Each structure stands twice: as structure tokens, then as C-alpha cells.
Image (cartoon, rainbow, N blue to C red; front, side, top):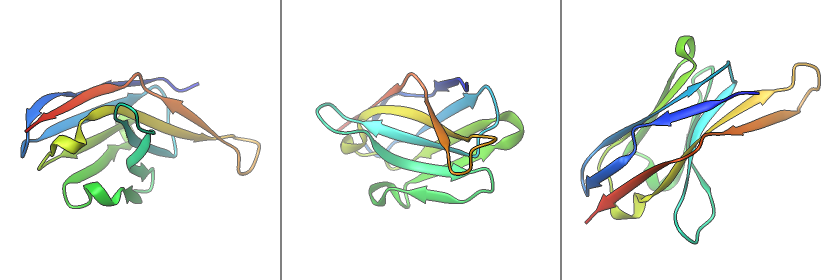
Length: 119
């Protein structure tokens, strides 16, 4: 079991910045951020592997940067040039590989943190 604790959400004006943090209770091979706006599905925002490979949603490329500190089991999401459409609950996600079963992974989720961007 991996527990995730998020921080850093809040209210910001359009064009502003926020930084989200997520601390995992153990090591994981992939950590990322998803977001869910009211009435919409939860979508990937950005993810990063323990080796540093990253993946971004097209809508945030060039504005958001994901990074991680493996020694601290922490992932960060720096969000710049925020837009009202970035408003959502942001969830930290961690994936862990089963130590015995090849190809089997487990998903863990944080409690979510609200990001609101005013126009």
C-alpha cells in the first residue's frame, strides 16, 4: 500500500502560477497528476517515471512542468500561465509494480486538491 499526501492547490488569477506537491509513503515507478472538472472524466495531466521520462497532456505542454525527487518520494507539478479551463480537482497518482507478477501494476490515489483559476 502506498499513501499519497497532496498539497499546493488554491485560487489564482488567470496567468498566475501554482505548484502542487505529492509525497508518497513508499517508492513507486511512476507518479503523476490527473485532474477532474465537474461533469468530466478524470484525465492525465502529466506523469513521470523514476527514470525521469515524462508525459504531458497536449493542453498543458509548455505551461506545466512535472518533476520528482526520488530520495523524498515526492512529485511536483509547476503550473504556469494558468487558464480558467485548468480549474479542476487535481489528483496525485502513483503506480507500483508487483514484485512477483510481471506486467501487473497497482494504482494509488491522493485525496485531491482543488485548483481554481479565475478569469
